[in-house]
Image (cartoon, rainbow, N blue to C red; front, side):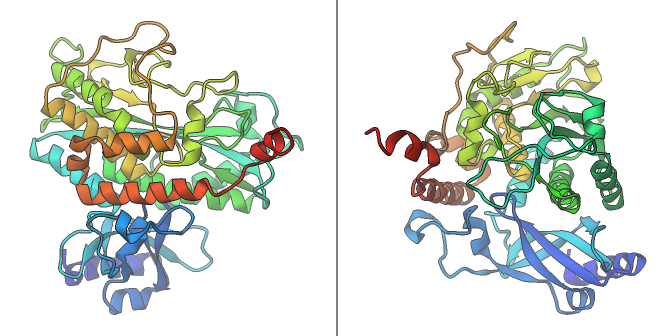
Length: 454
């Protein structure tokens, strides 16, 4: 769509909502929103905003990998033109003045898409499905913690104080009263989400102290990735307004379970029929091929589902670790497997990928999971038998740290080809730079146990 074609829609939308300011948003590798803020008149009148493409090799700390570590990289840091997605325009309901936040796609000035952009990677995978007449449907479940404000990163996080004036200390999974302790926050969160058109479903208290989960209605993967990105921003803002933090760290507290981002996935044909279910209402061959693709390629895709140093603490099995799976087995209504098939009608048959962390970039989690399943269907891979009973002792282990995970991703050529080699190499370079930087920090554990003993 050209700039001239966008103008009438944007003019009408801005006029209807009285917009005076615009936030142009782009998700980087980590999921951090980058962009520009400008008056609405300037956004409409001065042409599309631009950013350097280097934002897509930036690490979570704001650094960059060395130029020689990034294949295909043009160190000139070329400008990108930000093209608004007219289906991804949201109000900023907490802003003092009427403000729009718009998610953008990125194109070089020569017209080609920027392959490093996480949103483009997801669109690339969805195009493969569309070419075969397949429509993937997803439903994310996102866990998070509410914690007391903490301005000193040397101190551990703590659960916040609720309406009763006390910290939550015990585990209150599914407790309504425990959620009600934070009613003012959640009521404002829902008001904001309603104003933005975010399609939230249920809110529950999870296993950890101050840990919650929000489920989204099922739908289009790109739209839901946009919504998860917007939800995370909205919740963090709402929590600040209520004197606490909302964190999507995979493992924010050592003695509490980690936080995940589970993705339910199904597949429809052009008539809207579920391709994962056969005429008898049982799992179809295509479904089993999809499962097999997840089993074959998800271990190599783990840096996209567990992208940070902290991500792998969620998978460590301890008495307080919760139910994070450490395998790629599948099973019916079995929460010990990484690939759970919930009890449902044939029309709703789906697989729940339980491996992703809440800290992951939603675009890349969905792209990775759909890419792995696609490779399984394309190559008609055979799934292992469904797991009956506990899978904790399963032999299908995942990488146990980011270094090993990055090695496995680098060694998986089919994954690089489907995600895009330019993106894959750049992602690996940025994550290896983060890993090196992490090892420059001396932890309190090292000082406590090694200072006077070795």
